[in-house]
Image (tube, rainbow, N blue to C red; front, side, top):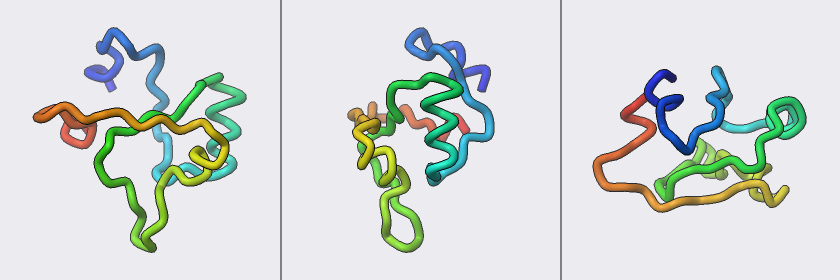
Length: 78
């Protein structure tokens, strides 16, 4: 979390955010934390059943996908 917090474009890091995002979690993120979007790199984010981990955020119009940078991965940071 320290590394992510140090990124100049990061306003806040939300600890223990679940993967996948549930409706309850989305409400907390958007209402309590006041986030605008869930952002994810253009790599796969599928669950074992084949569904998209951020399907609810996509349906709500609150999901943004960004291009990944070769050699930089949030998965590696975690």
